Length: 184
Image 1 (tube, helix red, strand yellow):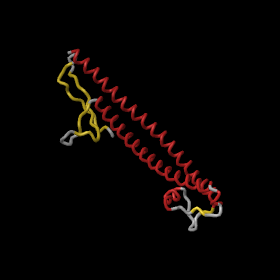
Image 2 (cartoon, helix red, strand yellow; image 1 turned 180 degrees about the horizontal axis):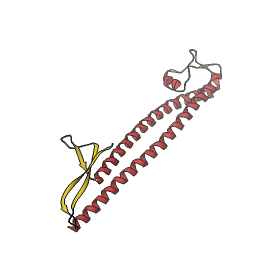
Image 3 (cartoon, helix red, strand yellow; image 1 turned 90 degrees about the vertical axis):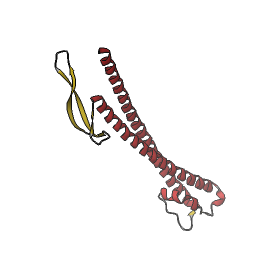
Image 4 (cartoon, one colour; image 1 turned 60 degrees about the vertical axis):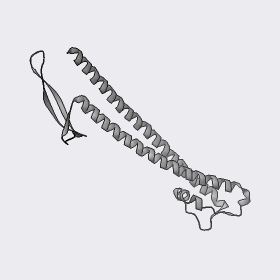
């Protein structure tokens, strides 16, 4: 948003010194009257419009980060299921002469981990390395999740500060209005 212009309007009142009183009004990009013309706003309205616009932008960023976090969580869930299945299968020493050949329910997780499933399955001796790669990918995604949570907290704090500023501007305007009414 940017301010397009400022103009002074005649308040049709005179101050105590007899001078004609004026007030500044501001035109802001994107804030229009019903007929499409730019709306004239006081400084308080201008600050509120800018703050609310900023809060909306921050809210959109928060939603985007939360959607990304949800996708990362879904990926972690898939990798956790694969890891658990492989660890359980590997811990059964009766499988030492067999191959892990259960890829179908874990196809996405195998791809997420950056692994290529051999056509005959993974040998018992291959599983420690495969499990380590899966857990490494899980650690990486957990790190991304933690960073995303920190970003969400930061954006939420900025959004809340913006709403506090709007609230403070409204309180100030109310105080000025009450003072003006009392002075009449």
